[in-house]
Picture (spheres, rainbow, N blue to C red):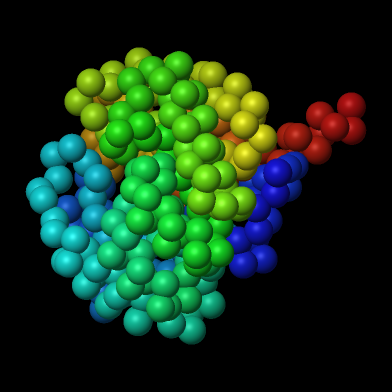
Length: 272
């Protein structure tokens, strides 16, 4: 299946796309990625120059250690950012799990919706469906990222597809939810999900890989978030081989090179 995000074609054999993270949350686990509102346009233009196909705007850290943030504060951050970004030329997706934030953002020019709660909130799902925008939905049963192994992830993604069908959402991209979203999840579970990523093509939906600088990589290489770029690139190349259609990353320029090399190698294989 192909999903078109405001002219960006994702899935069904098209070239892998890069989603650049535009992080307006100072609570982020990767502090170097935080962009204050007065620099947001410059950062967005930099991401475009580096090769981002889509820019994913997020105002709330989902790290387990992050301090609480009210929905109203998240909404204020998102609205302020979207006001600044008007006319910048970026294809924007919005990363939020709260219907109030999504509803406010839809008054601005966003092209896709990124829901880590996997359409588990019926009000959110209805707002998303009524918008007509493509949806990226992460594996979630009762809360974001709650599957603790590959079998549970597979079941959760099946549930996500059922929710999307129930609300009439056709343009769906699946995110298997690599990362420690809940305390019960182990780093081994993340590695297993990466190793078996290709099996998720059974859903016949474009697949998103979001592994940038995450803790399971840090656990293996023994480095903090700021020093996990090379480990991230290694995992991403493997996931591209496993069928990832879009990668969500902090380091767009480096990943653009990886995608270019991957595509060159795949062309060589096809010629043979």
